[in-house]
Image (tube, rainbow, N blue to C red; front, top):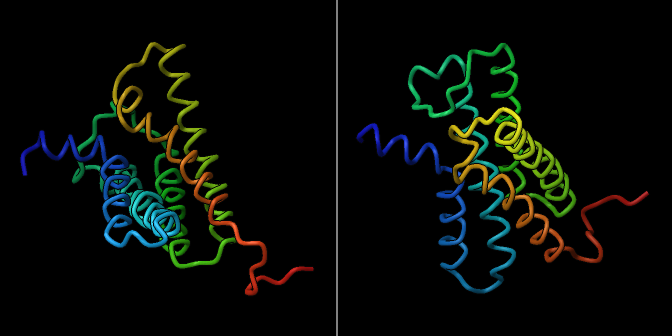
Length: 166
């Protein structure tokens, strides 16, 4: 694989995962909304979180292509571990009940919209237009939470028999 191809995939990974979620959801058109929601949780949040862990892990950065131009940061490892936690939770959420999915969608939405807010700050105040501040990652940081929240609302069932209500 060429360096250009690897950089293209790296810089557009969330978009590729969204495409995979749509393709897998369309394979069986019955219950498209539920299937799409599950695929978004598995591919975009689950695999995307694991991918972000690999991308931000200082121990693995020598093996992965980067276009962020970030300086070495002592918070890089905690950031990577937070991405791994969200990724694993997303993989579990693909097979979990609605309440667990609601929690993961909430956490992921705060995480991604916070990241988008930071990117906007970098573009406006620091005049930093390097990747990922103006790439598809910025766009997906804005749109993925919105899509997940809509799918969460659509998939809500009045009563979950597996949940204990106090």
